[in-house]
Every structure is written in structure tokens, then in C-alpha cells.
Figure 1 (spheres, rainbow, N blue to C red):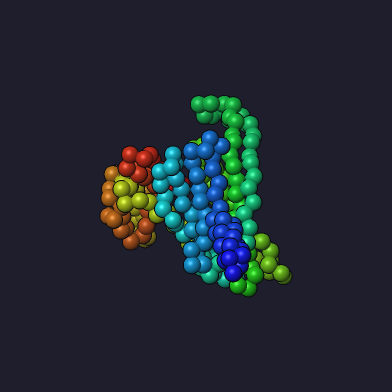
Figure 2 (cartoon, helix red, strand yellow):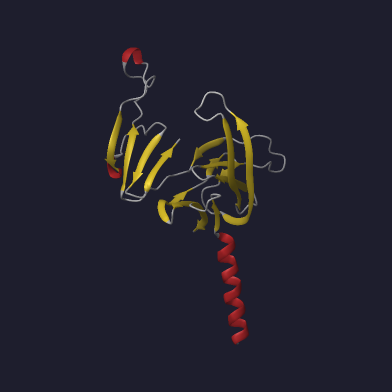
Length: 212
């Protein structure tokens, strides 16, 4: 009886470790964690052990299915990027770029998979969705992106709201961006048309985050 109990605990522990994956920056300060909660893929971000983004949604909704819910974990694969290049029109012409990568693969009940590739350097996080070829399907229409950014309540925003379409001079809006509203409480961001990139956020005294 004791042996069976220990075996069950071991198997459950293995499942929990596999379902949650973590990728850190080369200096170990910036960390992205991925997990599936009740079938929904989520990610969170911390810097110097302080939460910068709470569990936020991931996924795509396509004509081939909804990849934002009822998903299960398949695999996670880590890697590294290290390259040097020259850029003439910035302050530093010789750049050395290092980052750690994580490819997080999830699956629907019909066995269609979706991968999310995260790339984390000492200062930046980038990610993209990778859609494989499913059987004889040669095209996929992305109808909606479920990606979200859930900042802690202590966050203040610096955002420019999107103008309503077909307004302004000669109905040219939104041909120009509106002004930025600085240092605002998160709950005041209720613009009907949404906001433009980039968006700047101050997470208390933990640091700043730029979403672009």
C-alpha cells in the first residue's frame, strides 16, 4: 500500500514539472514561466524574483480550431542564441546578442498542435506562435489572437488610445496617433478602440516594461 502511494506521488510530481516550463535570461535575472491552467495556456514574467507580469493568456483562434482553451501540454525544448552583428545607425555599431529559447508545444483533443517560441535575453523577451502543417491543410486563417498582458495592480500605464475609425479631418482617422496619457491607473484604461503600440508600464518600484 505504501509503495503504491509513493508511486502515485512520484507520477503526479513528474506531471507537474513537465506541465510548467521556465526559461531564464543568460544572467538569470529575467524569467518566463509557462503553464496550462484548466486547459488554457498561460505565461508569467519576473525580474529579480519580482513579478512583472502575472499569469497572462496565450493562444490563437483560427479556422482550424481554437488554440486558446482545452489545450494539453506536449513538450518543451530549450536552446541558445549567440550572434554578433554590425549596425551602422545606432550608438553601438558592434552588437553581441545572447538569449535562451524555449519552444513550448501544446495540443488540442483532435491532436492538432501549436508551438510557442520564447526568446529571452538579459533585457528583452520576444515570442511567436508556430503553426505546423496539419495533414493536407495548406492554409490557416488566424481569426483572433488571445495573447494578453496582465500587469500587477501596482502598475501605472503610459498609453496612447486608438482613435475611432472614419473620424477627424476628411474622415482620415486613425491616420495619426492620439496623445499619450501618462502615469495612469490600470483600471482607467477603458478606451473602446484599444491602444497603440508601444505601451509603457511602470510596475511600482520593481521596474519598467515596454510592450511593442
